[in-house]
Image (cartoon, rainbow, N blue to C red; front, side):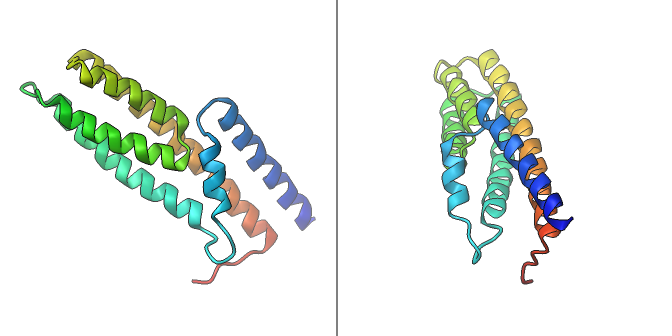
Amino acid sequence: MLGLGVDRLQADINRLLTSLFHQGVLDEQFLQLQQLQDETSPTFVYDVINIYFDESEKLLRSLRLLLMDREFSDYKKIGLHLNQLVGSSSSIGARRVRNVCVAFRSASELNNRPGCLRGLEIVEHEYHYLKNMMHELFQLEQQRLLAAGVRYPM
């Protein structure tokens, strides 16, 4: 019975990942990240993704603060934040977040405040969708490991 639960959970994980790839949420870089995980670092992907989320939250907060300032005119600063977000999104395989950041950066290069505000809204939407899907993936993975009887050293 234990094996059936593990198999079902693995199938759920595979379905979720397949869906995220078909939607363009993730790309092959995420698979490469997964390949770096092994028995010596069983939470590697989880740890890297959580660092990404922590750093991205800071960048998104900074972008929002910059754009909420009515006197704001330093669009290069927005571009720098977006470059960081593009790079980190690329490194974990967050394809859709990366792509909408690139579009947002185009608006900042044109000093287009309304375009930047809309770009931020879209980036935040894609970011939160990714975060929710990764949370679901990690919950399934944790359930699969528990069902398999895997215990990590503390």
